[in-house]
Length: 117
Image (cartoon, rainbow, N blue to C red; front, side):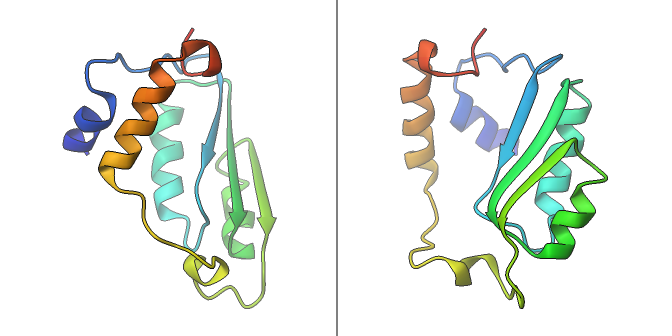
């Protein structure tokens, strides 16, 4: 995680989370374990609100998460769920380089990003 944090953030400081609403977004939730870990880490930074938003998820996972964060938005909870990737026509992973470029682009336009005060 430290390697990826250095790769993704570069020299930029960690954004201030305290007292802010934070939206955690993922491509979907099966078990929700990664989302739970992210919410736990954020909770320690004292945000005013944590919202989880996903386009597709297992219904039970969305229900369980509601007790751990302030709000959960699940676009679809199909039955049977199976796997996140089965609900996409293209489920290719985003490379570290592509993500770094996107974050650099956001950082170069702070007026368009809520990550900056």
